[in-house]
Image (cartoon, rainbow, N blue to C red; front, side, top):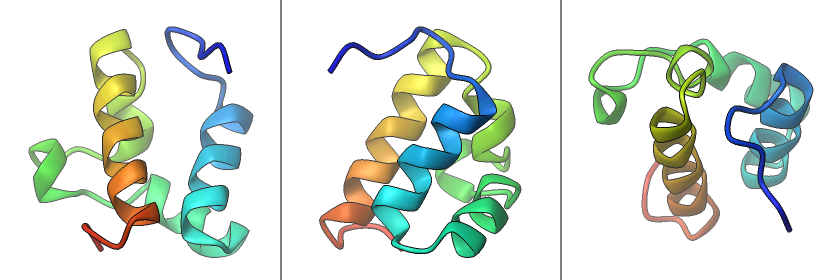
Length: 68
């Protein structure tokens, strides 16, 4: 699948929902400050190509039970 450099909010929410398994929790997660993102939220981090790569990595870890 081709990933955009910086996703729309809808795209970001779809990825988070797929990883977390619940749209409501995914929406909350997008606005939660995370230590792994240096205290930033996934939503603000994903605004740059590098940040979006980091958010995808965290979502991949969540999907594999590595990060919670």
